[in-house]
Image 1 (tube, rainbow, N blue to C red):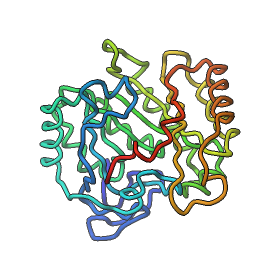
Image 2: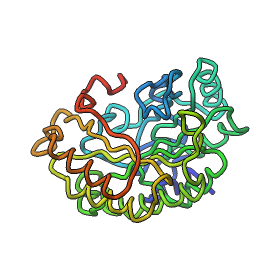
Image 3: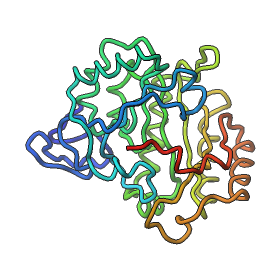
Image 4: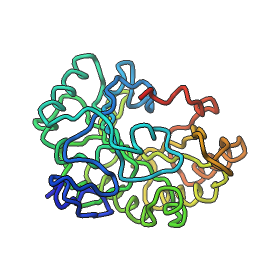
Length: 286
């Protein structure tokens, strides 16, 4: 059972008594914090479509990525407090506006509040948009409520998980989580030009870390056959203020082409990005 106290939602299993005012790594309370609500048109085209994704951005995060583009809301728990009933009204309003799905962005730290809002089942697909750092046990509580999983798979190297996201166990947790996601929703199911059900794995190429990207793609190719999942190979890395070293630059054309070639060699199908995607203008205004 998912609970705020002692908190058992993410792989950190910090055990914080959030209902008693304690906070763990995510520093979040026991009430969902909604930082932004919007129809989001910049998700993968098989998700957003003409109506956009009905995105609900939650404050806080279970990771601590040094390069996070949403750090204004992920680096600290910010947003409007909402209970389950209020969240349900927000979802229904987005659908009434024409949103093609409900896109839950970084929701893990508030699942005890979010889950009741997903019942009864919504008339559009529900997208679970997360950093990949999940417990399989937590995800099992979402079975039948989530249609599309949209996880990151950031690192194959524990040293990078620790250095860049404060999670040495990132890869082992994310790999197990993605396999659980696929067990739940199965292979990709299409509804015309949109995904009706399935797993779409995102990987953001980091400058100077092509070897990490190749290992991530190797894992995907070893565990999934063509058509089972889709891959979004992203070159949108945008240096945030204060970063130094290789993190202070964008991904080069040579780095992206090396990653793209490896993706195809692994028989993976999905989406690529133009160089223009690495633009701060695509980051939502929080």
